View 1 (cartoon, rainbow, N blue to C red):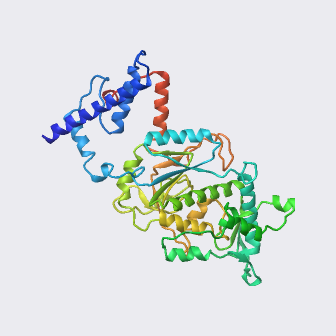
View 2 (cartoon, rainbow, N blue to C red; view 1 turned 180 degrees about the vertical axis):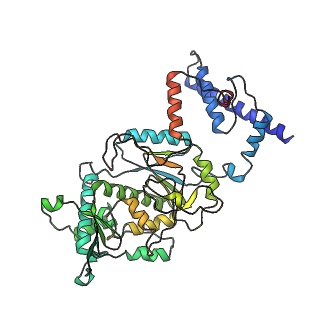
View 3 (cartoon, rainbow, N blue to C red; view 1 turned 120 degrees about the vertical axis):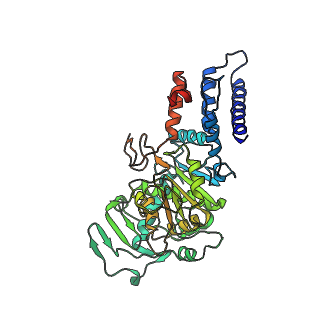
Length: 445
């Protein structure tokens, strides 16, 4: 009886789906026009696939075998198989996408992704270091660059450096200069690491460098930047690391600072909304088609003290990490790079934000290197985990706003088993060419 009930329940479900599609398209097409049966059939197939039901033959023939009904019942046997809450992508209160407003091409792609996977977007307008005008991106990033230069050699934390603060045993090791400048973690970051109380993060450290409020503006007036010659202003600064190390091989760029600043804006929004769990994407991301199912199943096993979960990474060795118990793809992070897809919680967002705004550390290197470095030092000791294989990858189409290489078209050693954006592209080609999506019998044959 259970098998028979499942079979007819499934048939009823797909029939209702067809009726809903028919109603939608009767609304879309005028009554005096001919209803596009081929398009209707294609969308019915996609609906069946979306809810996990077989779709066999033409629009007028739908047959579930006993085996298909049995498999359908098995696919929903666990509590995590079905949506039990309104969490986005199965786990999140908000999904943020960092994107330059002028990159309409990327925003279009992300909107297609969100439509396909049914999650709304909270846009974070990325800081554009090319945007001219008072208070615009170029002015913000130029000021941040000069604040980094001023902080590195003249100050420690939030005060002027004294003679005793300057390291005396500077030495060169390859392209690194160790003990190159005064360094100190912000006190509020160290305190929060040991007392994660739920309170306002307030304004501190590098917040004063860019925030647009009375307190920050008054601070900037009281702490003006020293005058620089044109040559000094145009001289490239090297990136630096935590604990006063300078990397002479890698120069700090405005694109790096823009990226760091954009992710700080995202973390500020997570903190403001007090999201229990938040996903942060960059606007060049693609996801596994069944990403929600993967996340819902895996999230039950994520250790309770997690700080970051990387859904994707690049140039990394995450496959070497220790598997989290009772998961097949979640591992302890080893060397995660790239920030195109990661998850934070309210507590960890506040902690990360506090460390990243530490004046001696803020905006000193690529943001992904900074997040990885925070896993290594005892002062911060961020606990992070990575999906490997990843459930999110970067798609490089067109010019990168960070590295500036035109038409790069690469994927960073990672791939998806079932790309959502590839499905979207296939569907668009089929619609454009007026072709039929093959039936399940044809694909099985």
